Image 1 (tube, helix red, strand yellow):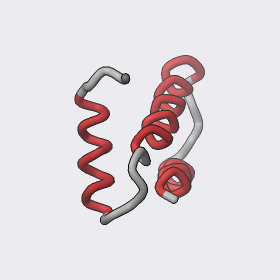
Image 2: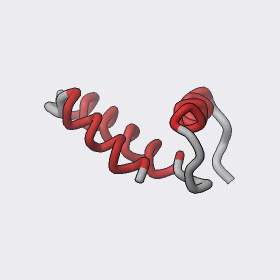
Image 3: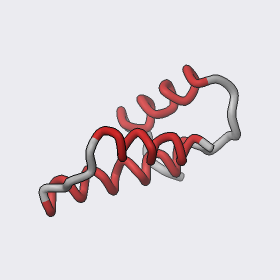
Amino acid sequence: MARENAGRAAVRGFLAAQGPGPRGTHRPLLTCVDGLVFDRLVDGGDVGERDARGLVAAALR
């Protein structure tokens, strides 16, 4: 089982505000966000806000 932390709680709160959806949706979204943060830290990242919003929207489907 994954350890509870502020990031997971924030994602669950965000998803709850979006309305009902499939249980477990937070994991793909957290994975997406983790990847974006890692890319930004390691490579300087060039994913803009529009792209990030698209990734989040896809994770919510």
